[in-house]
Image (tube, rainbow over all chains, first blue to last red):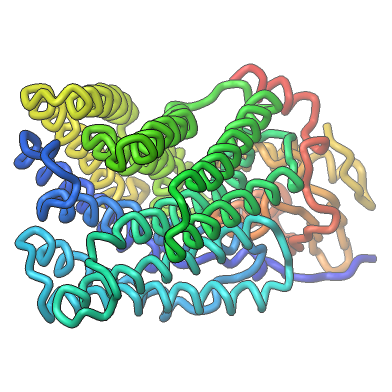
Length: 430
Length: 109
């Protein structure tokens, strides 16, 4: 005789209703950012601290990168921490605060109006990230399972909140002088807290869980992941220390080396996962995601050139500085999202549409819910646009920038087409 | 075929043949060759089937769909029996649990 149990409750995952608004918002933001880039492409190489560039960067960093990552991570947190998401209400609040705050902030940057609306928008973003942090922290405490990936995500969200608080102080500083120096002086601190602390740490944390999972790889190496975690956080903390205590620029090489080493270790982790994969065929979505691991080398290369420039001339080469920001937001972050969207969203839509029919009727494969040819064209046009735009900034040729921005706009339209196809999908089964 | 524990080997073989139609949507491989099914017992008096199975990842977003499909498959194979699915992560799934047929399928893809 046997004991009878119905323990399917432990498969309970985050509702699609929580996740889908983040994806929709992210996809639209990518389109908006590409439109803004297209209309300002010829002047985008002038300086990085221009209203238009600030608007584009924040649309990419917050509307596209952060909203997509928040959406995906609300879905993936249960997988990462091996426990349920604490509160869907907090997730909705995160979305609502960010969804209102981002466009107001971008509008403020575009017209360089740092008044009350932009200040309130910044505060709304702080609230959005605080909601997510609380949600994540309580979920982790409840789950009682400790794993390295959860620490990556939690620490990344702490850095995100710090980035937002520094950003808000910079906005207030235009009106109230809350900081000892000009807001522009804090730009490297604000930018690197966000790029390294939030994006790099989070992408490495989630990537080190998802890449072996999707490749069905036998490889795992928690010791190496802890090293990566230590190098990124140690490097960033040292950078903050250099910045706050105005140490010599020679010391800048220490965080650059630490973070560069962490990227090399992460690249090695991904390579070994790839080599130890059981499923030999790698789909197009994974190829685009793995491309982002290669693109991660570019910002480090540009950063080394910038640091050498700073030490020798006290000014970084402007074209290299702008390229550095471009390859991070339009290269590394965008390529991983372009790939991972179509590894996660089709399953979320499939669950929404066919969950109740599982085993009762023949349902389509999640991969068939979007157009594979459109995905391939999107990937091709995106890579061309990205390479051309980077070359255009480095060479300072406006015509190349305009042509490349048109290609990036086309890739964002193709991306949105496929996302819309997924969102509009209806069951064909009567 | 994988090493599935059962109190009725003949019926278990029939059940596994039916469960081979239940696929992991991401991998495209059936749950039997993937090694997700641990135990299938039959209670002839109570007309029920107990199936202990796992998932490749705990809190897998497709988990509920996979377990529902497994339940429906057992219902279809054994009309009149009430299947009960127990999801367990002890032992957790690992790559060694994939059958030889499953490995051939994954290598070919």
